[in-house]
Amino acid sequence: MVEFRKAIKKDAPAASADPSRAAGAGGDFNFSSQTLLRRPAKDRTAQSLYLEGLALAAAVIEWAAGPQTSDFPLSKPLEILVKDVCDWLDSEQSSRLLCLSRSSSEPLYLPAHSLNVCILTSYLAIRSGVPHDQVLSLSQVSLLHDIGMAGLSQYWDNSQILTPEQLAPIKNHPLETLKLIDRIGCCDDPGMALAAVDHHERVDGSGYPNSKLAGQISASAHLLAVADTFTSMTHIRKFRKAIKPFDAVRAISHLSGHKLQMEAVRKFLQIMSIYPIGSGVRLNNGVVAKVIAANEKQLTKPVVQIVTGAGEYVEIDQIIDLQKERLLFIREPVCLGPLDSSFNIG
Image 1 (cartoon, one colour):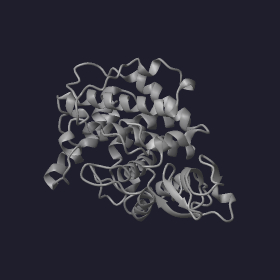
Image 2: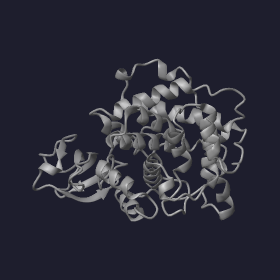
Image 3: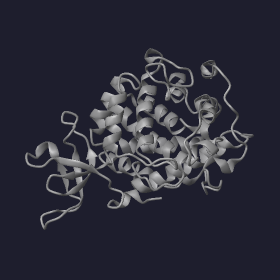
Image 4: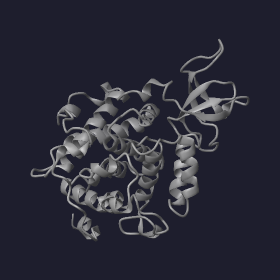
């Protein structure tokens, strides 16, 4: 792991020794290292896999926020979870897990954000044709990409916008993340592990912690950066509201080429569509639907599943490929929270 240490150009602040600060609200996550070993993947539902992922993410953050006097105890559960997440995302049921990652009901931001970024990054990598072994490595790294924040809950769990002085330790968290990934020893590919430390770097050199330019940032880091940005924008924080996925896509498009890599943004749009998977839309006939798949050649005409509507001919849960419909089209994006039960799993 010498390559990891070479990438650390300055010391990051030490993680807090108080495990309860890992989640911002108590340190008892009731997670056993055997949780993910009891039930085979084929017997899981998307919801059970998502909830187990939340529990594991919280347990990892709790470990990272503590004194770390022992070896990382969650290597096997982490390996199993990531494999099952990738298997699920590489199946016809991928939309179920992607839609759950759109949930805004989970009260603990950092564990939920870590898992949601992991799910989206893994899906983008799979659909981009990244080799399977590299997908698994990137999936683990993306789940761990923010563990350097574990001891900084007074900042990331804050209800106020941070001052420049408060932002200083936040900007060092990728370096602390890299140290923890090195300690965990979960990734044998140093280049893939460096995606975690580079996911806040920007192509114009304005990012952190090392102000890298586009050519110094790996393709994996570019992909992780887009997934992290989209997930951050579309989930509520204590100091701001979430924005609609459609508006987040528009914002990301504006960042393309000068903040986020153009190729990574292009892949994101092709794979997730202008109306991202898991988001809500209203069709021109008044029906509200959930986007469950993209059509890469027609980004405004994804595959949708009916959530609610008016009229006796509306079939709830009906799946419609808008690319094949001449008379149906999306009129506007909508918020699904009150309508879709998958947004209330916490």
